[in-house]
Length: 183
Image (cartoon, rainbow, N blue to C red):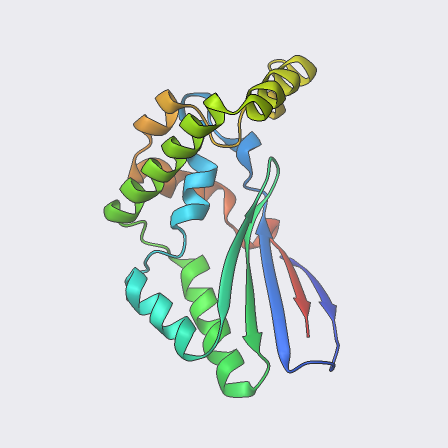
C-alpha cells in the first residue's frame, strides 16, 4: 500500500532509502502539540529486541547512517547504506525493525522532551524566531500551520509514552508511506 519511487544509479556503491509518513505537526492533537516531533526523535531509540546502543552500534558496524526529517505535513527517516548485499540487507532489516516496532523507552522520551523544551526556550529569546512565530500566527491563525512544530512548553511537558504510541499507531502505517530509493 505504500507509494514507492525508485531511481537507479550506479555512480556510487550507495543506496539512500527515505520512508516518509503523513505524520507532521499538523496532526498533533491540540493538547499534545509536539507529539509528532517527539515520536520522530525517539523512533530509533529502541525496539522490542534492541536498545538504542545496540541500534547505533549495528548501524556503525555496517557503515549506515540514519537521519530524520520533519515538517508540518510529513515525518520520516532517510537511511544511507553501502549497496553491497550484506550491508544493504542488514541495514534494511534494521530499518524495518525500527519502523515496524519502536519501543519508545522512557529514558529517550525524557531526553527528547528536555531537548525540545530547550529549543522552545531558545526560540523565545531569538528576535528572528519571535518575529517568525508572530508572522506565521498572523498568516495561518487557528490553522495547525499557525502552531509551532515543536509544540509549547505546556503541551510538551504533558506528553507521555502512551501519547507517542497512540500517535505512532495512527500515523506510521504502510498505506500512507512514501518510500524513495535512490542507488
